[in-house]
Amino acid sequence: MNGYLQTFLTRETAGQFVKTGFVGVVNTIVSFAVFNVMRIAGLSVFWAVTVAFAVATLVSYVLNRRWSFRLTDGGENVRETVRFYVINVFAWAATQLLMWLADVWFGPLSRLGENVALLAASVIILIPKFASYRDLVFRRALDDRDVAHPPVGAER
Picture 1 (cartoon, rainbow, N blue to C red):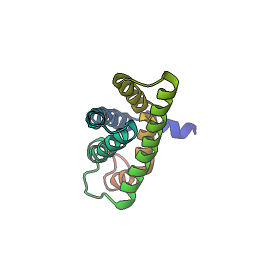
Picture 2 (cartoon, one colour):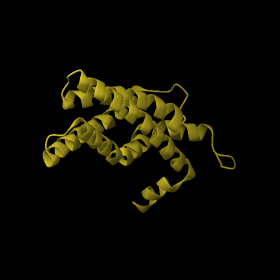
Picture 3 (cartoon, one colour):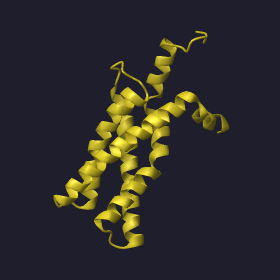
C-alpha cells in the first residue's frame, strides 16, 4: 500500500493531477450549466444530474485522454472507453447519493442549495476518479507510451 501511495508523489502524477483537476473545473462548469438548463426546463434533480453527467463525461474523456494523460495516438479502444464510462457511472451514483443525502439532511434544497450540494459531490469524488482514470483506464496506454518512448537515460 505504501508503494502505491508513493506513485502519487511523482512529478508526472502531480502534473496529471493538476491537469485532471483543471479538466474537472471545466467539466464542473459544463455540468452546472447543463444541470441548471435542465432544471429550468423542468427536469427533476435526478434527470438533470444524469444529463449533466453524460455531457460532462464525454468532455472529460476527450480532455483527460488527450491533455491530462497526453495520449494523442488515436489508440482509444473499447475497453478503455467502457472503463472510463463505468467509473463515471459510479461517480454519477455517488453524486446522486450525495444529492439525496443533502436533501434529506438539510430539507428541501433551494436552487442554490442544489448547486452547493453538486459542488460538494464533485469535490468528494475528484481523487477517487483521478486514481481510477490513471490506474484503470489509461494505465495500459501510458505503459505502452513509456515503453515506446522511455525517459532520457532510462534503459530499455
